[in-house]
Length: 448
Image 1 (cartoon, rainbow, N blue to C red):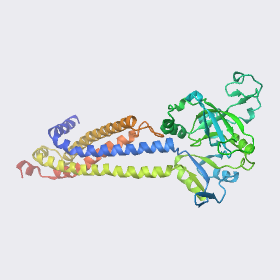
Image 2 (image 1 turned 135 degrees about the vertical axis):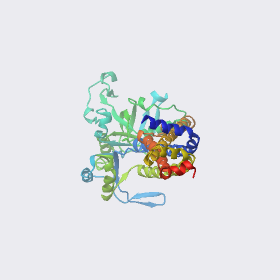
Image 3 (image 1 turned 135 degrees about the horizontal axis):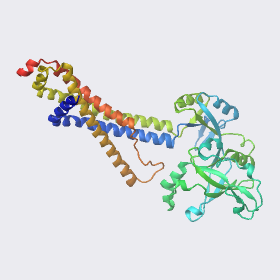
Image 4 (image 1 turned 90 degrees about the horizontal axis):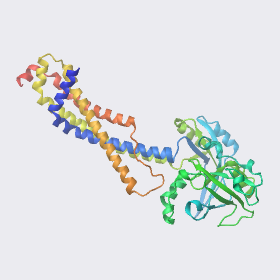
């Protein structure tokens, strides 16, 4: 075996220039294909896992709107009732269903002096989610607090504990836990802060930030009922939070809608988050949901995934064509090498080498050439990706959800690229190997 390997390596050493020239196409093809696939997989992973999580889908009533000039009028109900939620829970592939309710009254938030040096005031929109939806991430921190509102008398916040504060009447009241979406943080860091000369925010340091919200108050219009003032505490950043606004426990939104709005508004859910048993069940669940007259609000996830798949396929075809052309070039080079080594191969046959030995020798040389070309191509792709990430980090301004890297070089992708390079060289070497082994040794030695 050692002698066989030595002979193969010796042959490669004697004809290295020919093989190096032939492998250039393989290197370029592997580098291009690996680069484009890693880019496509990286962007898809970032979008569908971080921006559009696939384990959950949000379901809402299919809209039935009509446009009259600049106005869009609702022709039907846009809410879900308990019967619809029960039907969703019975769908095959659904693990759990969590209703969501929008806050139907205006709200005005103020605070932020600890972060920005001065207090800010802004209109906010809010919705409510079932705390069980985020229990794995936040445990009991994001919870219903209505049962905790009857507090003990106090003179300062230190007497109330960490989860409460001392209000103006001298009574301990719980902070209402709040979640915000990573969209809010990314939009602020990516653009909003620049317009107002504000510093960047570290999302990990936001936990514990307290601010005040007056529900039922607005700078746009007045409310007939007295506003309700609550102190909020940010408990985390979650993908399940409303993209632009604040997210409260479901019971809190229900209470505010009933107190400041109407009893009907407190019993209507505007959407539901469906937790899937597996990602493989997503297509089946979406089809069933649409058959029920509902629609999936995926924020463009499916369109983004389809667009990424098409672009990745087109770019991968470029790399595939390069490898196919390189395989044909490999075949030409091996035919040339066989012609140059005709007397050598004839001598091997004359001293007892079988046809299969000749074929195996040439195919083994192709394997080594393919492996080396594949390794160089993968290294080139990694280097190109590193340069792109470096340029993006230093030259491209921050934008929402800007990733640390646009590429995903998984082990299976690298292994597939090496296997593809080796396979292309083997396919290119087989016809010359068959031709070299089929010749008559006497003709080769005689120069005929």
